[in-house]
Length: 149
Image: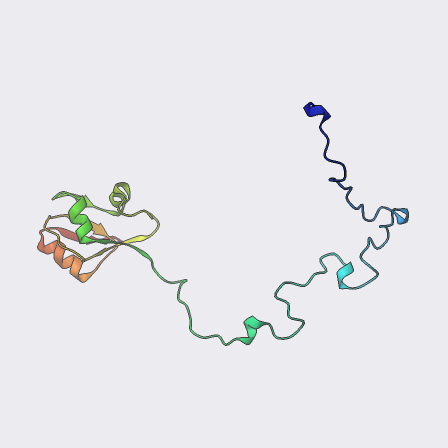
């Protein structure tokens, strides 16, 4: 047996129906779709959520609440304890450096420094937002907290 001699098993392959190829084919004229009506037309199917003309489920159930997601501002949050562990005294910290060190991974979000943990090193921190406790802890340690715009 060679590759050029191989054939599919007898009966495993069928000819496809050739619709609309003349009356003699048995599938001409209306192409096995019957005479008239929605199902004989192209694109003549109803959507899966169509409910026969009654008010659809999504319109029947009550709507409540509201979302402000279009105007929400998301932040990469970093605690002062992470800064204490990863940086030496006197270093400058900004979003680009945090991305390089792998502390944050999304460059498109703004950076917010939170005050969880202790900090004893004087660091120059530049971020888009600071919590009150973070600002207090950074300044008490001798560092600076500068807000970016």
